[in-house]
Amino acid sequence: MPQGAYVSFLGIDGIGKTTLARAFRDKLLGLGVNVKEVSWRSTNGEGGQSWPHDALQELWVDTFRLLFGGSTLSGQPLALPRDFATWDSEEWEDKLGEMPLTSAHRSGPVAAALAELSGNLVLTDAVIRPLVDSGTVVIQETFPYKHVLKEILVARQISDEPRFISICGLLETLILEVFGSAHMQPDLGIFVDGDPTLAHAWRLNETGKLGLLEDFGAAGDRGRESYLQLQEKSAAYFSTAAKSWGWEAHVVDNSGLDANLTRGLDLLMTSPTISRILN
Image (cartoon, rainbow, N blue to C red):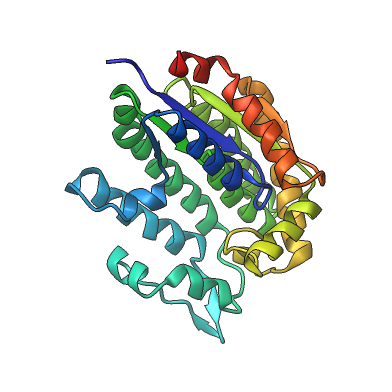
């Protein structure tokens, strides 16, 4: 059976990764290619056998419980569900985005990063790799290095105590190496680069609000300036990572959706990875 491919995107929140990934999916489907979009979130909703779904669902909830660990609401400790079914049915991610929370304890986001890393190791090995081996082109809208890194950046925002920050630095080195390993790297990685102020405007135009983890809300700071601060810091790490991994860069600008999509799709469709699939 012909080998499939694993394609993933890295970039700041709101910069157009989802739009490009879905246009790419539709393009391949129109050419008769076997394609599946995969994310940790979508896998949670599929159910299926106890492994790996139960583990992924539990780690998903634990990541949030750690990330917001130590936060308070109206002077009281924040109490979060322990099980995925309750978390999902009661839409706790949306609830957290609307709560005026204080900062988490600094250890929480660091531990959340490790839980997130664990979940994505499982996702890659137990979900993505078998699909690729079966001949499927797997499209992952966001390379998970992004989520793990942002949790470390939240921890840095909470505390700058030198001994604590040294742990954050060690983890940043670790995740760059782990996500840069042959097992975790996609066959085709695209770094979607662009101005955070543009991304902020596009995000608000699209949804009317920022997502839960798109600013430093877990550090007790929300809003436009918090968003820009997190995204600018993230973008610097993403650029370094993409260069070290040899990823292609797609730079978006204010030339318009159609122009940005056309350039992005051209980059994807002419890549050696996709040329192999089509030929």
